[in-house]
Length: 617
Image (cartoon, rainbow, N blue to C red):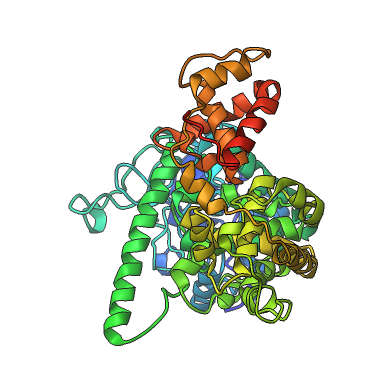
């Protein structure tokens, strides 16, 4: 029903009313107003006296309570409360229309319209997060706390609270599933207190019913000061909402477009990522993610089992995009890396960052991976990056690999054992490094992938099989290859890469003195230390102190093994076993501080070992 101002009952302007707290939501302000009058009144009476309803009945409250107001209602409310109309609009969730939400078509008095908007919008229509420390100061709830984007208070540097510790319900004071009706509207509100129904078993009915009453200021506020990464992500998001503009892959976008991209990435993370994919986060956030992933995996197993019984195929349906997660910790955990991903400087870099997440989703979705762009509403730079990631999957073997027209008749004569784990450094820098110059892919990472691609020319291997043929970890196969190939495709250099790869293959094809790197790795599989006397002879005349037995001579062995076998020093016998991450850090220190002094002697030792000299003699 559309209301005209002349059809509203005549009411007196309020002579006494509180000044709204900057950013305060309309429901919160109404509670403050009702409780702050010289003679406090029930919330229902406050709604009537401010023109929001025509009779003091709960049924009169519209379904869009706190979300939007019809123009006539808004003007009447502003007149009766002596507030500026723009100030009132800022109290409504619709204040973010065109910035963080698209509420086009929302009709405040149409319950069906409100329900559809609630399903499609990334916002809370019936609840709110809170900053307990802000509540302690103002007893007010902010309208921005109804956005899942706003998960932390930058002023107090704490995570928002989402659930009352007493009643166990989400904050918000709105009947969930019953439109926008506020709870206990016939009572005088207590601003800054939980107005949900008490826990089951404690809630009375009728006139004896009483709200929970928990003081929101006492809710636990988790300090985020030790985790500036999370606060920095929140700062970026709020800055985009404030300016109305943001950057995605080096391109300027409207705030609404930016939020759409952010929502797509967050949905992808919720669909397939695990805690380890999100980087360093507060323990509370990681615990929330692990609990979510455990529940998600259980539901996936149940769905797959049911599909197998029924003869169906595929992974679970996409639900993560449309749903709005109610956990502030979970949203902080996924939005932090999502913000960082969108901050990529180009589509190529965005594709590089996106590739591992696509692989995670592929493991879940199983089939129709190319529909992922539709499932997660990928548009603009995100859609381009996804295409770049998926392009290498569209037949690497046919376009570049063993079944390519670039392979000579009869194939190449070299085999996997003739390729080192890391492509020869000089060859890589001359032929392949320029193709990845604008990316952030590390040199060793890229050399490993080029070696795998070279092996792929020799037989109809999968990426996992190429990794196994080079004695590389199975997990470094598909994900690493797709990441590099996706970047090359995004940079428009896939054809140049194919040409360089086959030119190198042709060179190996014509040589008769190929090295068997697999045999070298087997022969030196126990080379975990440079013999102490040999090490002392190498280090003694230099500025490198020999150190203790089992120390630097072990890191020297990792270097020698890599030089002799063409292998990745991380996989050397010297660095295997427990605490391998710490050992790698110590090796890097050795490489930075000592290697320059002993490199010549170690290179000679590596050459002797590669030639078959007995290192144990």
